[in-house]
Length: 384
Image: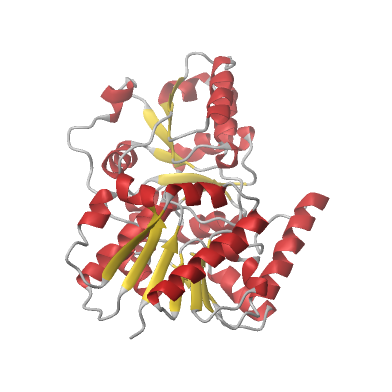
């Protein structure tokens, strides 16, 4: 019997979401295999509902990594963490006598897998790859070719069966051809369907004037998301545009990022513009309500190689987006006509894109096509 380990020591964002998708998929399946979910003990505290619904199901077994151990290796430099955490995976593989391991966060294991060969077969999700990285400066070129070399070397590991790349056919084709392999496969980034929070009204909750169209900037907030540039763009808008729109920033930000955001908000010359910053985590139901009640979604992201669950939520809610045209997200938005693409994620480009929003006609049909190609079921079945 091909029993398997599904391993992820992180619990934030897509980590817990992906585990939830796989659990739901397995609960509906009639698999005779046993799936050992190896996760942080914090997972069973924060997501007890996911764990509880598997009770009585012999195909799903939970093993919880002590928090102290997770804190230890997550505090290590990446090169040390790679070997330490892979050794932990090996210990669980021996404990449960499994021949297959699915790493939901393959990135941290890349370096160790250049050198290590274990008895089990490995698959994993690669979130950031080098193909779409920028090479404008010396440091960018150095980072690009370092990741190129690491990818080339671990792709020779015979124990690695599949490396999944989210939403990116172009990258998987390049990697397979460049490294003479067929290990890299596209994985549709799943778009879960959530209900709206009953009785929630964005305008009342955030005290935004009813006549304003809300431009939503959701998710974990940091400098890579273009949040600072969004704020700077406000002073570049004309008075008639500041009357028409409001910006709502919702998501967790680390203390240093929060400090910078508040400083930039205080420095705005255009004090008549409505902008709200809610530094908090919101439930899936409230997030769905925010999408449905907003006019458009601001995504001036700076990582051209990354996929984004926010784009899926926007398409599912039939909301237009503003994104840079370079990179994976820009390719997807252009292909499916999901919104407005900018040359760069700079303040003046964001301001210009906001001015074009009223003219952009959102295409419901293309949104539906994009969403239909990325169901939770398709995602789970390809991984399992």
